[in-house]
Each structure stands twice: as structure tokens, then as C-alpha cells.
Image 1 (cartoon, rainbow, N blue to C red):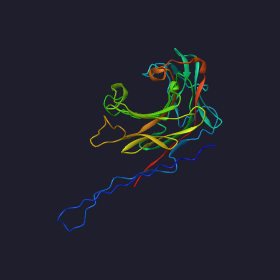
Image 2: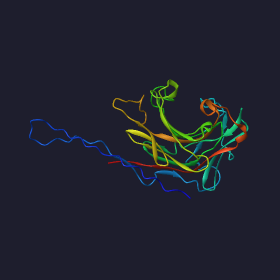
Image 3: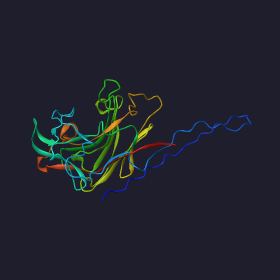
Image 4: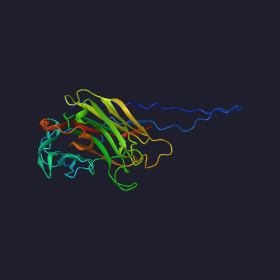
Amino acid sequence: MKRNNINAPLTVLLMLYTTFSGCSQPATVPASRPKYTFGVNPVWHDEFEHAGKPDSSKWSFVMGDHGWGNNELQNYTDHLENARVENGSLNITAIKEKSGKLEYSSARLISKGKGDFTYGKFEIRAKLPAGRGTWPAIWLLASSNDYGNKGWPDNGEIDIMEHVGFDQNRIHGNIHTKAFNHSIKTNKGNNIAAAGVSDDFHIYSCEWTPESVTMLMDGKAYFTFRKEAGYSWPEWPFNKPFHLILNVAVGGNWGGQKGVDDSIFPQKMEVDYVRVYPLEQH
């Protein structure tokens, strides 16, 4: 059964009053900061209620066995065995098998061109794979390369959920930009202790406004990245459309730090639903 959405918390509106000594006229009230909430009805969603391949009107496959910049060990395919909708969930499954020039197969789904969003609340209910060497992710990338070197990290990345199997009881949320990324040791992110993420479904969320990006797990915020005064695109490229990505990687620079346990496969990420709620400004 699908769970109801979590109502987004309301931002407290601060009013600043200026008084002038020696003046009898009333204080002036400057313009207030915007107040952001999120709509209660999704503008884009997939409840995965059919059976078979993922809905091609919402998702595309990205395929390849070139390591994806992280020395990953899987070949991404469009095979039904790697991405299947059944029993109300999308199953993205990593399999130990010869695939392309690599020894594992998996799938990577994107909403680019079919679901592109600037701001909003992203909510994904999922159960994660387990075991050393698994690296599932739910994340956002820019849908166009307008800044800097026209690629990563200049155009931004928002990691709603990342998990590595060698650190089973921890969920990570991060952002990457030209100014803030792990390759130059300026990464911005946080993690939250979370038991049972491979045994039960949990809700992974991102609340994205013109002023901040916040990651949540089961409604609990654990990381917020704020747009500070003076930021431009190297610090804050998050002012244009991004699209969703769902994938399960194997090994790689992070997921494979402690090796890969071949005895655990196949392993899958089950996604109960994906919902995107619109930003509302007051």
C-alpha cells in the first residue's frame, strides 16, 4: 500500500523592523523574505502499478560499461531482468553475470526530457540492496549544461540518497558544484544513521527552493545547503531544470572501497513510488 505524502514543514517568516532614534515617525518595514511551501498534489509521479518494463513516457535507460567516472563494475542495460515493475514496485537489480565487457549487470533510469524540474519536493519510497559492493542512488542532475566547462560538477548534482553496502546502517545526502565537490575536498553533505534500510521501505526526500536544498529521511531533515549572499553559478547552479536518476552501481571508487562480495548477488533496490510536488511561494 502506498503511504501518504509527508507534509512539508512551513518556513518561519521573519519580519525586520528598523527604528530611527530621535524620530517620532513609525518604524519602516522592509520587504520580507519569500515564504516557501510545497503543493499537496504531485505535478509528476510514478506509482508503478503496471507490470513489465518501466513506463517509457516517464523513464529512459542510460546504458554503458565504461565505469561512469567512478571505476564502477556494472554494465547498465535495458534488460527486463535489470529493471522490472511488478507487485507495485520498480525493481532495479544488480546481477553477477558477464555483461558487456564487465562482470555485473544493472540498470540506470533517468527522467530527462520526460520529467525536468526547477525547485520542488522530491519524495521517493524505497527499500535498498544490502551487501559489500552495492551502491544504490537516488539523485538529480542538470538537464542542460549551461555553466563553466559544460559538464560535471559545474552544472550541479543533488544526491537525495546514497548508500554503500560496506556501511550498511547509514544514508548519505550531498550536493556537488564547481566550488563544492569531493574531488577538491570541499564537498557539502551529511549522513544519518539508519537501521533496516534493506529490510523495510523508507521515504527519501529533497526540498529544493531558490534559497536552499534540504535532504530528509522519513521526514527528518539531516542536511541543508543554503544559497549565501554573493553566490553565483560556481557555488549555486541550482536555478534551472534538473532530472531524476535511479540506479544501482556495483563497486567503484566509493562503493567498492572494501571490495565486492560476489555471494550476495542478485541485489535490488525496490522503489514503491516517486512523487514530485510543486514549490509554492507566498
